[in-house]
Length: 356
Image (cartoon, rainbow, N blue to C red; front, side):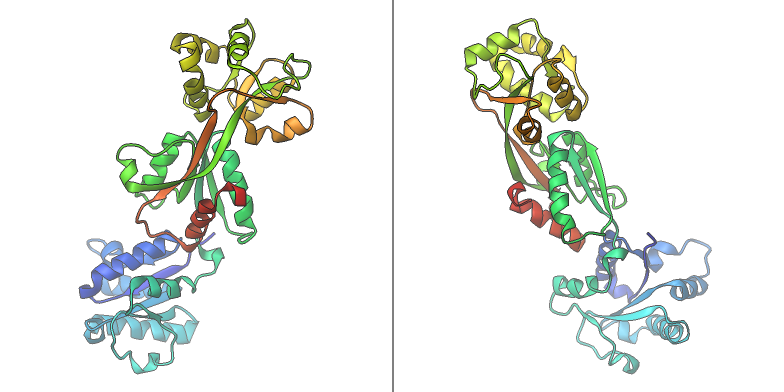
């Protein structure tokens, strides 16, 4: 997907505004040319600007008290208008920053009005670009259940944006939280679904909200003594886990491993829990489900992702004693200027997985 090229023409007095506009345009996937970024030492200033205007798809003319009296700005927009008439591009878009009179040949040109506030002006600008010209939405899901939840949100999102490119990353929660907090526009994630709350410095730079609270259950295979049982007592569970049999676990670092460790350690002790969770390790949830259904062992898994197997009779879910609820969170950067589709995805997360 080739991104549209935008040239920003502005007075140096409006550099702060131009920088913000540039960042927002880049953040939705556009390629932005600006003199302080794209002219290198030794370059011909005039020729570089002329070439950039000729090859641009859009020419953003920032109209302010300073720019209307700037000879450089006038030279740039006259060239842009000439190219638009001769070649059909760049499309000249007046950006009204102050209440000034635009050049007479732009009187009837549709403009974006930033005089009231930036948010209102940006809403007008963002309407100029179809979804096909926006960069892909970048989202992440924690290994296992977090990714399963993310798929459900994506399915709901696709009802509104069936053709929008989506880049998805699956990783452990810590790395996804780090990617959401990253300031690198080229690699940062817009949003992620993780199994833990951001900690430390990330707590100050990220927002988060619980999107789902799942319950863990004990999964057993056909012909197991607990097949058909609705629940299990604490004593029976501990006795079962201490038997010489396979307990299928997820690897260290995964969210499910930590959840099971936190649940069992107060009951079995750290040493015995460590041994139990290292007997038989499966590296993805589908493998855990397959191994249990084939009778290779039992496991503690999120109820959300085994409903289908239970309904089809491949496995049976037994309710565990105590608090076995596990929250999952949507995380996104605080005070970040995001693309409209990223904001829409965050709004979907805020509705919770029940709506997805």
